[in-house]
Length: 184
Image 1: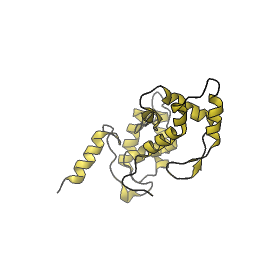
Image 2: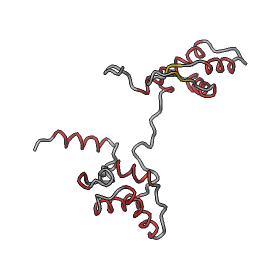
Image 3: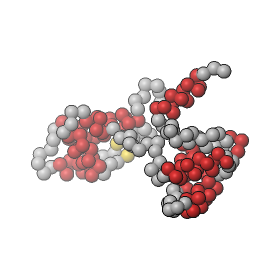
Image 4: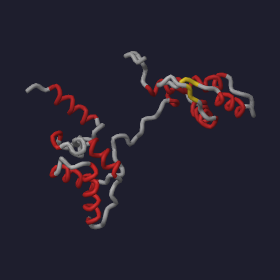
């Protein structure tokens, strides 16, 4: 089903949303009839843009799409899934926790993420003033994003990235491209 010409997933979602609310935008219902029109659209089944399975949307969801797209010149742009502004960042991992994790990983690259988390909790509790420890899933995601090896596999240990190059930043991608294209 997938080919190289398929649009982005965000665009497919936008097209589905526009197909649902398009009739409302083209011919707005009379005053007082909007809720009935929304209930009618909510009762219908639609084809999921990615899986092709049947899916339904609530009247409040369709109403939110309608009001978002109603007054703009490009409703497709408004109806796309929005990319999170904090993608690639770890707001729950403070600078002190990140530095402690980097130091731990440099000394013990074979440790599991759980062991890193347990030791991080002790290090941050001993700090003056004590710092809240991020959750285990946050630590695991942070380690993975920084290029840490799979949990407990010391043979795959790799140096973690520095904090200067975020994993999703343009500089990190361009560095990776340069290192892959250089010949030795």
